[in-house]
Length: 164
Figure 1 (cartoon, one colour):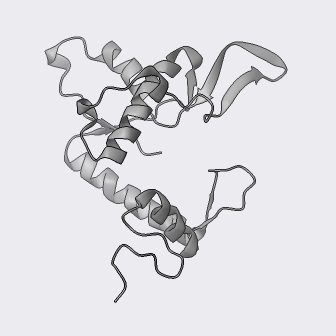
Figure 2 (cartoon, helix red, strand yellow; figure 1 turned 180 degrees about the vertical axis):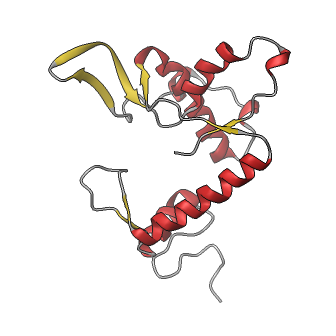
């Protein structure tokens, strides 16, 4: 009998979720990965219906528990990149180590994904004074806004969610 962590038919082991999930989604023909920009998959009808069902279940549960849906900006100004860098690096390391992110402290050289994000540096032919990047997560826009909305204990709890 094959070991449970051994890949079957070229499918990566479930223990390596970061390899397994994209492989399963592609093998099941839920997405087409041939679009010419890496990471910008085309969801096919059956896959998109599954995603819509999941989103519907999520929204129903969030409504049931009193959460409100927000839609935060897709672009983040460059000056907020360091916050996003540290957060993403911390979450990635925590996932890899199987620990709570609050237990980790990162060295400066461990933080960062500046080379990996998509940048917007022009509006038409005009160079922007402050370049922006396409957010990999929404935490930075959220945490930029929360202090503006939560001014005292009376503003809590702030029950939010976003589906992207």
